[in-house]
Length: 113
Image: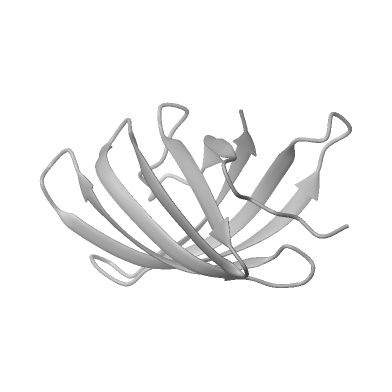
């Protein structure tokens, strides 16, 4: 089954300590062809954007940038692997790395609202 993320809304359900997303962070996904974009905000994030490519299996390779509540511009890259839940909603398992700040890595999970 090919996954299309267009008009899906996601919310963070877990994140490592060095991440900025939380249950208050909402992602609005758009997809055209294999190009994925999203605007997101909430919690520690005032405004964020991501852009990525979706492969045949629904995996996403993306880059993101965001402004946090401290007024810092943060940037990073992320690889997301989808899991389709029994209710048909999508859970994304994410491995990310900051390309700004301390360059640390982390893992997060976001789930379709």
